[in-house]
Structures are given as C-alpha cells and as structure tokens.
View 1 (cartoon, helix red, strand yellow):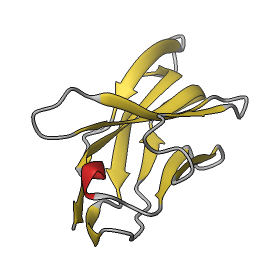
View 2 (cartoon, rainbow, N blue to C red):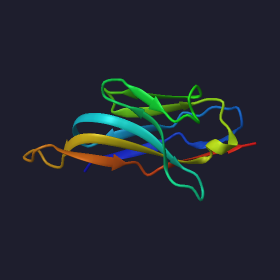
View 3 (tube, one colour):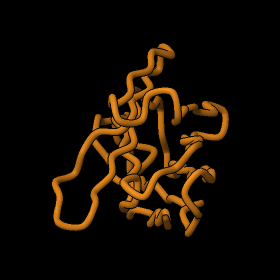
Length: 125
C-alpha cells in the first residue's frame, strides 16, 4: 500500500518556527502535486500551500512570506518551513499528494489522492 507519514509538529511560542515533514512510501512511480492543508478546531480544512512536480508553488494569503513549501523528490519527502508563527496557525496539518502507485509488481500503476494522518501544531501566545 501507499501511505504518507508526517512528523515535525509540536508546541512553539508565537514568533517561533517549526518544520513539519511528510514522507511517501510504497511502490510509487511518480508524485505529481503535493500540498499541505490545515484544520483548526471548529473550522473547515483549508489549503495552506501547494507544490507541483514542475516546481510551481502557491500559498494561502494568511501564510505568504512566512511559510515555505519544498520537496525532496529522491526521498519522496515534502516539508513546510513555518516561520513567524502566530496563535492562529494552531491546527492539525495534513499532507496531501496526487501520485501514481501500484500494490503489486504485476499490476499497472494507478493514480490516487493520498492523505497523511496529520500532525498537530500548537502556537502559544
């Protein structure tokens, strides 16, 4: 099976930094776009940042200039450098990937959208 495993969340004071990461595992042919979403308590999940396989990035207005999304294609890893954190950045952060994978060597690759389990980021004031 294919899965995304996240790490790097935690508790930080306002103004601090964190760098959550997400690693994809499985028989993966190629990873297309990768994204970070977040969901704060009582709120809907929102898109934070996107990075395509071509290197294009897009950020939510609320994080522009503070967050940087990056990926290591050789390691199938996505990172989110978060600086100047604010209490309103507190949320569970989810990694998302559109990729081609297969569950056995004799099967064709198929495209799927995969989610990580989430990592909690808490910013104290």
